[in-house]
Image 1 (spheres, rainbow, N blue to C red):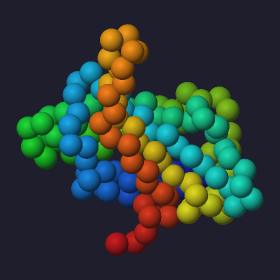
Image 2: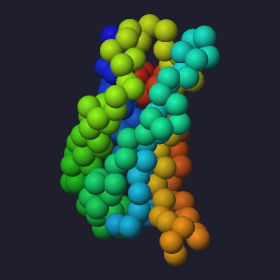
Image 3: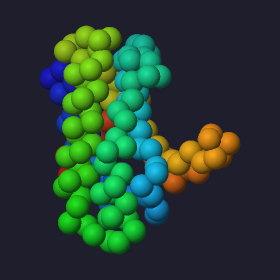
Image 4: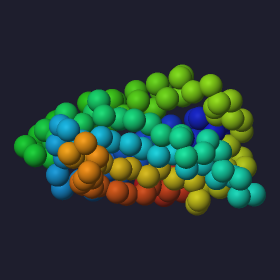
Length: 143
């Protein structure tokens, strides 16, 4: 399995966990970022700090789910987040490592870190609504 395939498989588990433990509040003005922290078994970090899927396009439906309890929209939110990851993979030029084998990926250290926040008053204030890590090892566990 490649690193990209492992990320996408772990993403499915993370999305399932995310849907069971969603933020308590989300608003249309929020940003949603999924940091992708990839660590090899030798401690090497791949992708650096800028390996982030920006998923603002999923916020509107997520807001409907959270604020109106409209759970029928979860598949739409999950698909939109997956699309954001695919766009990241297609648009990044430095991600040649995604086609490498995942056998050296440390699944206990590699993780997604989801951040949902709102920047207010031109950056003077940041309201944090959700900050949650999802390790690949936990996301890939067979349930």
